[in-house]
Length: 190
Ligand code: ADP
Ligand code: MG
Image 1 (cartoon, rainbow, N blue to C red):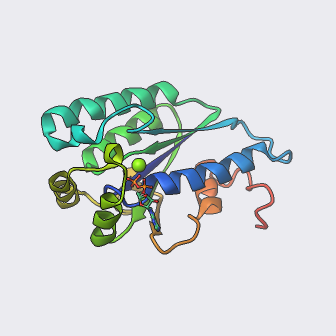
Image 2 (cartoon, protein in one colour; image 1 turned 45 degrees about the vertical axis):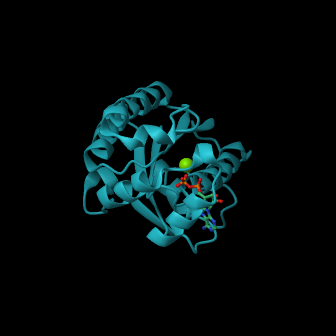
Image 3 (cartoon, rainbow, N blue to C red; image 1 turned 180 degrees about the vertical axis):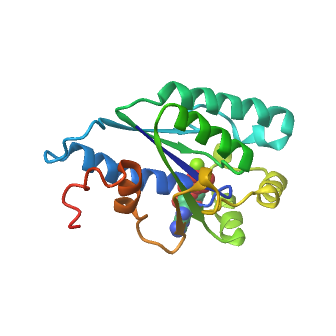
């Protein structure tokens, strides 16, 4: 039914935002007044797929990783599911490819751009456990190559930008976007 693509710099807070979004969407779905087709929220990430940070160190190992993510995404897309793809998703062409696959399955889509300053990403990376840490050079390289999502292109829109200073992502707007206003978020007050 819906695909939410998360995109942002390495260590910008993507997984943290995914957890927040997912928890609130689950509440909406489980609300007794909700009568739509959605039954579950699934998030896919490099970590849930056991893809190691070190695979980003060279393009030779990075490409098959995108393949694994794409295959997993196709496997999980379903009419009763909100699928959140929590990865860097920093290549425009890759986001386009995900968008096409989702539209082919008649899913509704949106993109969440998780923003933190480069310095904060560097700092947060430094303070992580080793297995969750990007190599410093890789982090710089990924920041340099990052292709920002744009609301001007159909495969990134609707686009929601969440800044590091934001308390909670705009989940009721995200819900509107992926249900196209067909069903109001239960108890959202709107
Ligand atoms: P990503 O999934 O983009 O790599 P994470 O969500 O795993 O990023 O966050 C990376 C680190 O930064 C974590 O240790 C997290 O606690 C910290 N972090 C993320 N967002 C914030 C924030 N807005 N304020 C403070 N710390 C944050
Ligand atoms: Mg993450």
